[in-house]
Length: 214
Length: 220
Image 1 (tube, rainbow over the protein chains, first blue to last red):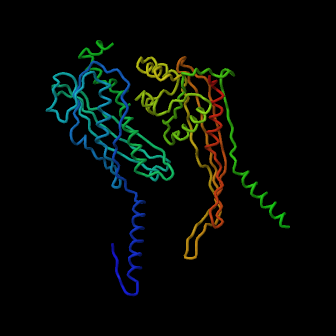
Image 2: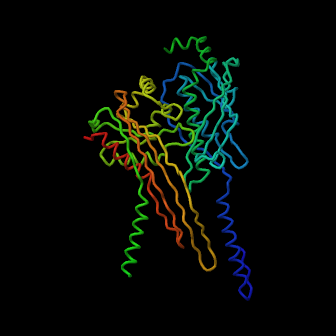
Image 3: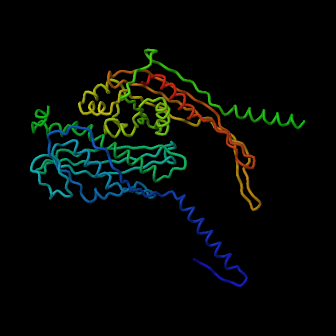
């Protein structure tokens, strides 16, 4: 702490001024518009009966530690949460599923190989959209291959979440809530639409899986 | 003269306060005038619609209505508990918007089993929001070495519109609809200290809707 002792007592006054200045700076930093958010959320188990399909899901390091920077003032650490969410969702889709961090670790010799990646993350705040909502879009891409490495499809999977602006609520917490809703939406989209992808449907017909699972 | 001034003051204060009451209208439709039977082991779940682009039914309002119903000995399952237990079938993207979709969803044995396991007999969808319509006036506050204060006058109108739809989860049919409109004006008077005269529009909408929903059900 800066404390200048002078015989006339002006040193004490200076130290009070410095302290007040620091306090003001601290208060102003609380009003900063930049946000750094870490999403670390548990997700509910999906309510679904998995189909008799085996799959290997590759969560590479760039995906499991993904840090989104939708604009220069916002950072969202999505890696851990999106891995948790997709683990949960894929377990509800496939009867046999293994999670690996690289293609070399795959042990399954048949079934699907899915490599998820994030294409883009976008954020919109009330000052951008003139609505009382914070919005988060996460655009995923699922590269789907056979165990032999043959490409089945590259599926674009957008997810969206929004949360209302609340009086005195922080921007970071609103963005985090919207990101959690967007992740839940990604799980819902996957559960709802995965087996509707024409290429997956065709592959399942080829493998005679649909007949078996009826 | 002194007494006359006091009476005038009280009169003016009462007039200002009377301006702070919300005007609430409730429209109700149900096929039967008889209350819906709800056994002691059956529950109601109140869910908010969140699929609209520019607003979402806020959780605070849902909790408020649920609180009003709980007060009448009606078992209400918390919204998030139900949504999590049935994930992902009641997310904004997947939640059934109409009875045909609900019927299709309830044909899934795992979904039906989860609804039955939690003894959810009725589902109430709430859809709506509270918006500020008009605002006028201005108020400014200043602080100086000799003190500070606020001067001026501001006012704003708020409108709450909510609709409730009750679904029977066993017979898969609609049991009734309610719509509440609540409107009121709030004031902020700056007379050195800011004096807020707030009209509880949303709270009034919640009480009216909650009390009317209670009358739908006859608790054991």
